[in-house]
Length: 202
Image: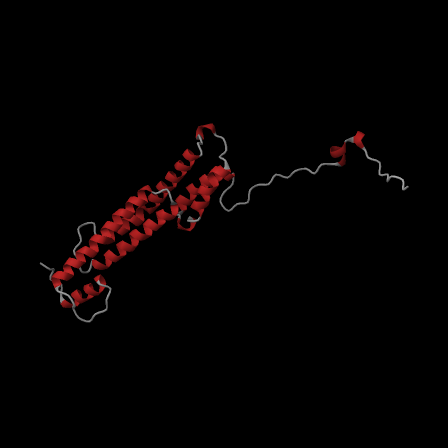
């Protein structure tokens, strides 16, 4: 049996579900209820699939794409809270919880990426040897493409990874050691003095 929406709400819901702008109800209440449940089901499925990606991916750009898709689907479901009775937790509560935990998810992704990079480079942190730039630069470059989406705490972790490779923080110029310019004595040696004498012209 279809929910007892008033006619105005049914028309509003119809226009959301079918992306229309009708002034009257164009479908039966039963069909509208069926399509509403299907609409919700598709978005719940998308949220669950994207959450699996968030928890597993080692690709930072995909990670944030998954997150954006989750929030898009939640926003669409939040609009329906006015028309549909959701089980707890309702989409609004789910979104608030996800925002609160987002930093933990980002840090977990960073750690996955870095662990994978260390494994591929066969780097053993116990040796305390410097990491080879050629092994880690591509990974850091990929992470830095998303730096505007990092929180302060996750940015601090990224900076720690970065400095372990380059020896300085993100955005800082590397320290350049000044080299002493060699003197003539160091170049030639006292016993290697060359006479400034041109050969005689023939």
